[in-house]
Image (tube, rainbow, N blue to C red; front, side, top):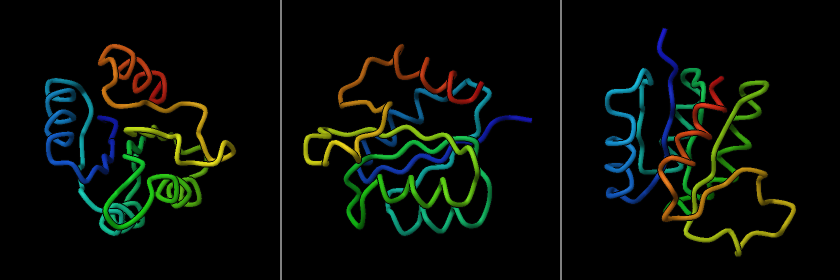
Length: 115
């Protein structure tokens, strides 16, 4: 069964990037451009991985990660941001990607998270 990934980013160009990155892979991609919709999707089904932008128009990706982790024990997520400098150090996840990111490094992190 293919692994499912929820991607939350309010930038349509970034959603297009994710579409291109995951086309032809064995992953099912579900995309949304809002925090509220991502939270609804998280609560409506299980995903193997959450990829979220830090700054969504209606919320923070770090809060979305908390919702995801509360729903699923051992949930895996990747945070993507233009800059994490706005976060207090204790809120910066161990693994995050600043835009623009290197595709090879990002895809390796996705593979590792889903292993």
